[in-house]
Every structure is written in C-alpha cells, then in structure tokens.
Amino acid sequence: MSLNRLAHTVIRDYKSFPYDWGYIFGTLASDGSIYYNPSKGGIIELTVKDYDYAKMFADCLNRVTGLSIQPAHDNIRPMWRTRLNHVMLTRQLLSIQSWKTHDWRVPSSLIYDDFDTARGFLNAFFDGEGNVARNNNGNPMLRLSSSNKDGLNDIAELMSTMDIETSFHYVTDNPVSFSYGTDMWVLGIYSSDNMSTYVDKIGITMPRKLAAYHEILESKPPPSDVYWTGDDIAKLMQLYPTTSIDKLVDIFPGRSWQSINHKVSRLGISRRYMAPYVNSNVE
Image (cartoon, rainbow, N blue to C red; front, side):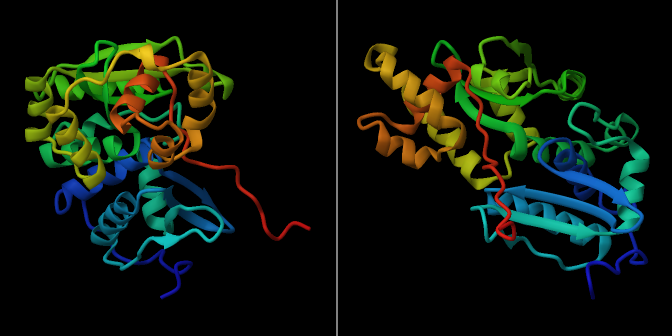
C-alpha cells in the first residue's frame, strides 16, 4: 500500500493503545514533526541518529494505525527517518494542539487520565530531549531540555504527580544555543533516590541512554578542570554540537566520555545532531 493512500486506514483509539499514543505525543513535542497540506497529505516524521528511537516511533505508529512502516536510512546524512503520510491521523493529532517547537503543551486531558499514556509521553520526550549528565558538582543527573518553557514546565508538573522531584532553570551560559537564536530551559532530576524513582516508574527506553545511566551511577566523578586548557575548551565548544562522543574521545586523548560530558554540561553546550542539509539535485 502506498504511503500516500493511507487516509482511510483504521485509527485505534486512545484507550486501546494508551502507551503508543503517549509516545507519539512525546515524540512530536521533542524531535518529531507534523504538518498537513491539502495537496501533499498529512506528514508525520521523525529524523534522528538513533535507530532505536526511530524504530520505537515507527512501532507506535504501526500499532495505532495497523500499518507496518519501518525507519529508512538517510542516504545523505547518517540519520534514520520514520515518515508516514496519513491524513486522518495527522488531522487528529493537529486537532489536539499545535506541535510546533514553542507551542506544544502536555495534553493534560489525555495524559492525566491514564498512567501508560503519561509514561509513553515521558519516555519519548526523554528519548529525544533527555540525557544523562553530571551537574556542576560532578553528581549524576537526568536532564531534559527545551526552548519551550511552558511545555517543559508542564512536564515538571506531570512528574510531580508521580512523586518525582525536579529542578527547573534557564540556561544562561549556553553560547552555542544562543548562536542559533534559541533560549534553552533545563529540567533536572537529581539525587540517586530521585533518579531511581524516575527509572522505576517511567523507565528509560533507549538502550544507549539506559547504559549511560547505569554507567554514570557506578563511575566516580571525573577529574577537575585542571586538565582542560583554554585551547581545549575552545576546540570542544566548536566540535561538540555536531561531533559524535566517540570521535571526541579520540580527539581529546586521556579523557573519558564522562569527563567530556561533564565539561560540556558545565559550559552549557547543547548537542546539535542535525547537520546542514545538502540537496544533491542542485547543480
């Protein structure tokens, strides 16, 4: 069946697949995109580096629609794309709210009625915008970031209903984010007990981030900044937004990925996975 002819497939309701709907909501609030055009149809899309994230989003869309789409590898960039042209589903999602970066909110009428929907939303948002890091004191933390202050504040309120304490603050020392004209807000989950509550109740679905969570709990805080020269910091600020952590470990010998992440956390540098798009058809 062509992806352009899906307007009449059955959409399963919220109560039948609450987790999957929640995961779709959370993906659209983080890295996903959605738009409707009468001539082109309704497009729901996620393009990311992590195959596991793209596959999870595809699986949720499949369970909601009864289809069988799979992530496709981008031939231009090292990315995975889950893309669905589905008029009915697009209209239904857009009828809930705008999912634009600065507009989305936690859809409380749907999320608060069902724990599985809330868990799906939080799992997806952490898969897209969450990471495991260390705070300025070198202590482990779970961190979610967004330029949407109100949306992130909604997430903090949702977590409070689950007895998960968070700390909400504005990133004032983020030169990389500001160079893109974006103000960033961070929601932090601190203390081993509080992080354990989050992991036990909500969980971390992406294997890479779950492994990082267990590793950072078992590791000692990295050495102090005495090993970072001014040239090192300037180079790190330039490379980190678009360079994989494996390559950074090679570029900065003697430093683990934990110490690199600790340093960029203190500097307030954000990751920018999306490389500039190059259209190979342009002469």
